[in-house]
Length: 340
Image 1 (cartoon, rainbow, N blue to C red):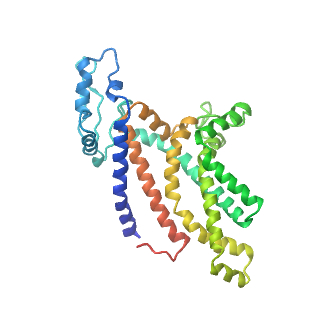
Image 2: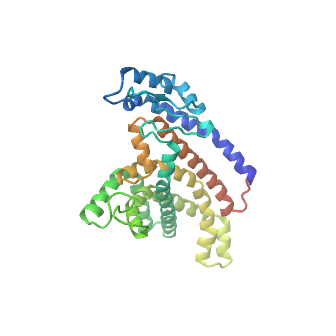
Image 3: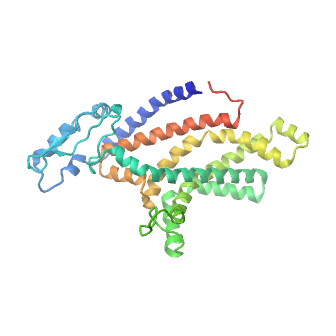
């Protein structure tokens, strides 16, 4: 088991660096100038921008900048206001040294900013993953049980709607209906700023809308896929044998059919986690959720390279670990599967 996990982690290294290279080149191609944002001040001198660009390595080829981000450099200190004191506006980039650098805009370590925001994002994405798979599997089973009935058709319509409706549009619509018109749920934030201490009810009420929107796509996919897998499993010989032995209908469905049908469904947990992390960027912005999504959006508009790349690193690692978790889940669902 340990050797398999280590081998899978090593296989994820090329994927990790491939994602970081593509993200870095996309950021380089985006319009805007981070140095102009940093040096935007009435007291800044004209030569400061070029000096900062040179010391940050932004005057190099994009691939050289990527290597510069991997290997690292010392802290860049430039006298921005002419007072003789170097202001720390640069970054000590060096992923291979375990340093994600310093935010160009907020002038704080990227790792510190991500650690502050990642619990809120995990709270949202893990909840959406549990809700999506829980409701999706349930709807898929119901659709398979009532195959070719109005219940089956209703579940299929729900799956189509879940895949077709844009998340940002649905989020705004739910805010208008449940927050503005009905006043039943809060429209934004993670908790009431006037509340003191831990209030589970207040936190759950703030999670209802963003979790519902974020999990809808997962519900649609899992329900459709579970339905198809169960119908395929029900046609197998061992299901007919179980029925011929006189097993109860419920035992055949839940113990023999569902358990085997969930093996392919489990393969998409890692991909679902990556999809939810990508969707959280939009959902957190719509609902003003204080997680990594809002941090990424703000850093992209501010051209904060270290913060964007640090977020990409964390998201890539989480996706690779999610895929590994999917592989390990095979053993729990079917002991016949052996990891090689």
